[in-house]
Image 1 (cartoon, helix red, strand yellow):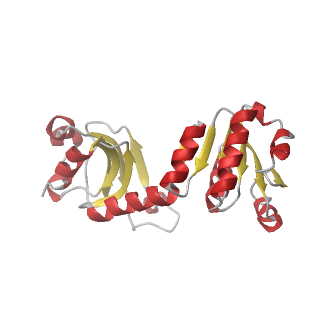
Image 2: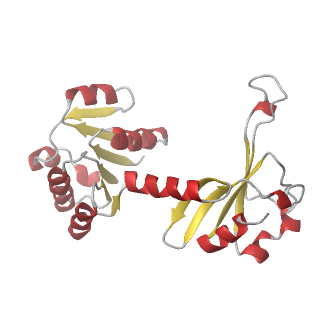
Image 3: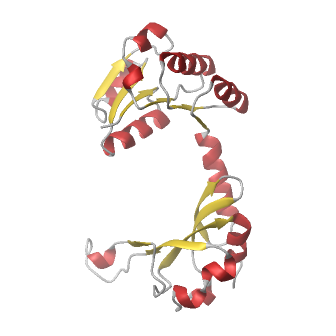
Amino acid sequence: MKKFVAIGLGNFGLSVAKTLEDNGCEVLGIDTSKNTVNYAKEFLTHVLIGDASNREVLESLSLRDFDGAIVSIGQDMASSILISLYLKEIGVKNIIVRAVSEDHGKILTMIGVAEVVFPEQDMGIRMGNRLASKNVMDYLPLGEDYGIIELTPPAVFLGKNLKELEIRPRYNCQVIGIKYLPVKNGKPGSKTDREKIIIAPSADELITEKSIMILIGKMRDLERLQNQS
């Protein structure tokens, strides 16, 4: 079983910690707020009240044996940087830190943390791309050039299967999944009332009005596909 420590149990830190536990990992949550820790007890097996910017607190937890640390200390950049430095010196190898500014992220990178994340910025970029793109239901960037999108199929795709559409040779994109939206003709809770997802669909899979295509490729190629009419 993998073990992680989540330092800072605000919205982002607790969300990551809960997801790790849901996936079978052991998580130790730490926060300075008694109320926050009491709330986190409902979701995490191990929580404690403590100031992780105090090196002695971290050294008492045998964190070197953990598989990683997630640091999310709100807007307190100084504490975030100190904690990251101490974790690095203690010997925690996989340190992921939530940054609140570009300069904060640069300092964390200089310290040598494994990953710096900007949740608010990333969500803003994702939403902006989704709103600006034609027919796009959701968008996930993969580096500067590539992305994954959920696309409402253009009208010219309807009634055709993937073999007929020739997505890869024509658009240089790959269909990695298809969602079929619920068909509201059954009783609540019935199979006909639930979303169906097919991963790595076959060439015979049909695109219908209830389909959402999940594609991966270069953004310029995905945009070209979106503009089909």
